[in-house]
Image (tube, rainbow, N blue to C red; front, side, top):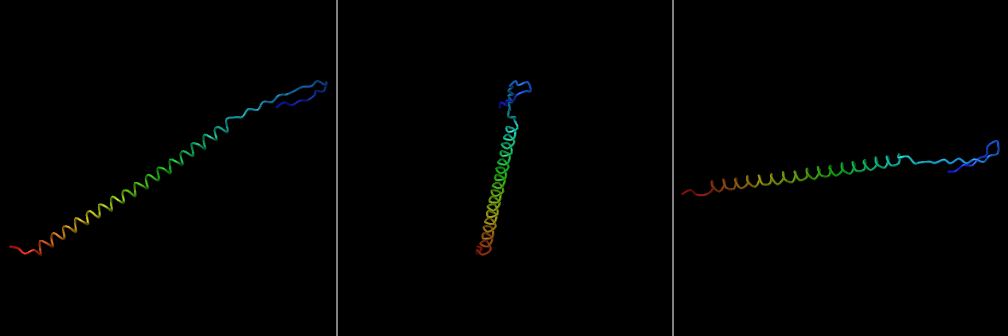
Length: 87
């Protein structure tokens, strides 16, 4: 930006003022990007943990069903042994 003015003795002078943008905008952009990456990583880790808990629940339910099936088979086998005629 150039700014012209006259002095008392009538000489014309021109002052040139250079304005440089600081790196403040760049720093703010970097902070925003880092915060965004951190938030995305947080949500991804939370989703992974939630899926792991669901998977563990399914495995636990399947294990319970398997145990119940074994107990039922044992009970049927015991009942058959008691009800079968002995020779």
